[in-house]
Length: 204
Length: 321
Image 1: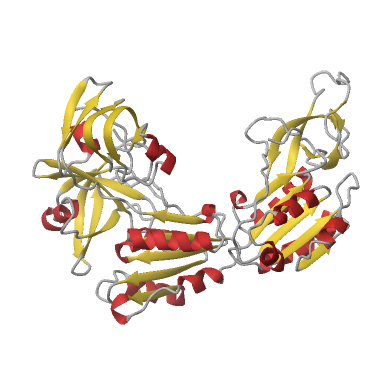
Image 2: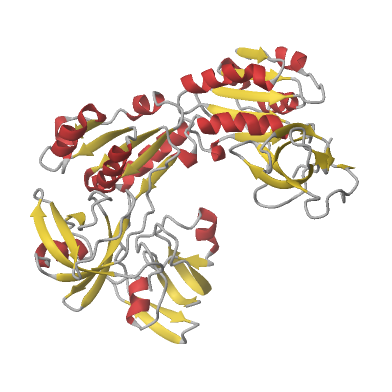
């Protein structure tokens, strides 16, 4: 159990520890400290050289600026793509998934936001989410959707926070949507406007 | 006691000999009401009164799920079985009144799939017929690989090939044709789900090969109804009902429990669904687990039994029933 993610309601995603699985191809998507999860998994693989020869890593710095791309450059993977952001890597990820065949092993590592966004693409490609391995590393900053205006605020640090779209004060729930890859934010002062508890730094 | 929807009173509308081994039965409701719509891959349990012996066997529905005028099943005659298929083949004729369970689906297509890859062996074709009928209406993408002993025994192959062209590929044992599974599984686009229904050996081969090639478990589906195996008679204590019963050699534990008047839960009666799972309170002997439901750890633990297909050898077995 990841100590930064205490047990919660069923909707809240849980993450595991990446293990190299047999398969003809491997796709790894990671951000920030997720690079460490990849290098540790590869080091523990039964045949790391064979795995690396069939692997494609898509990596980007985390939301707090952690960039371990140098560590990944030294592992000798067949294909490494370092991207400035998830948005920038999205066309590549979609193309890789569209061309892929069953048997491809998918590993996602890093922040919840990255794991959720990449998972959404994988699910849209038709693979069941249970088939994808995930490992949380690094920042716990949240991607939150305002249930009122539907706008999404990235890298939410405090609870409550102010919706970056409609300006409502939002309470951050553990209620999570795989379809939109975001936690749910609900107006906290709907009945008593202005009665807002002080914002606590819950995510870092 | 089956859980869920009430039973359906039916009349046998038609019996057709499809080939030397397989007969097709069509059932319509006695009260003239429409049949419930079912989903492709669903089965019903048929209640049979075989000259005093009550038989309740599951059969996949093969008719179009949207056809509410009747249900159709196909039954392969098993001369060495316990007698359910022989009863249907020899004694069930048009006009007879029978009772069906409401449909239950343990083998649905996964609607999230980009493509459905189906592998059928022999009579295992039946659930795919209803699945394909449903998918065709929805424009679903599928591919069927159907293996049979000979052209004569390849039930429904001609109709499938006529309707679906090269989406259907037939493999005949007597022509030396076999599914090239490795090649087939290698080329499937991401998002393909795999379905297999057929003999035990085929299901094991397909599932094992898929796993070795990196296919996720959640994308591999199989269905095999087990017939309760015959065995030596044994005694069982039913603790909650305070009685001791004897299970006959050709009777399943579930059937013996029911025959004693105890209302036990069940759904598929073939070791697949998990509904009849029963706690074992005491066991001095060996449980013969024959189901697909319990995990290997549970089977080794002797705390649970699936009375629809599993048996016991030894001195004392006490169940919480």
